[in-house]
Image (cartoon, rainbow, N blue to C red; front, side):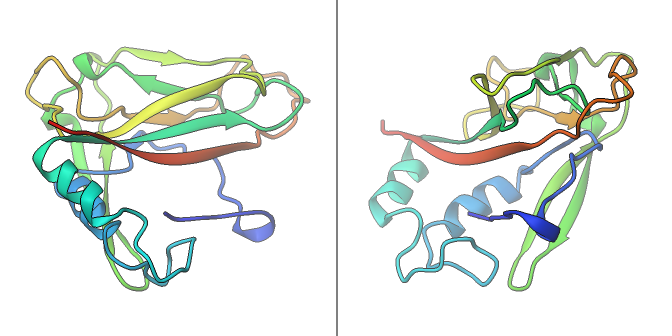
Length: 182
């Protein structure tokens, strides 16, 4: 999908509560992955990232975009750990659409406003051998209190218990598309 690697292209931890896709942006990105890569896509080849059969199965079944997040340092994460918000504690009124303008497409993220109702979980001292799965989009998810969350609001945050001399966080994400056929 999108790729940043090393040097000046490394992204800093995202300190805003967000999700990488919206009600519009998630399905749009799924469809785009069934088309030949664009300028800002990481893998430049002639074939789409998803085959026509997979896109068709996703349109008639369930599909999801899942991120695998992992610390890549030998030492546990002590600075800007990742936090996830329990979807059952959020409401549609908490969400603001934020457009991201790429060279050849526009993507949408959700930012979230703070709410005393939000319940947060975070992962202190995450080790290199641990992986967090983050649901970025689920085609069968509901924003209206259904039984399946559409996504996971998440953010890095400045943990006041972090040691003053802790090393910067280094992490990686791998984004996967999962399709369930009906």
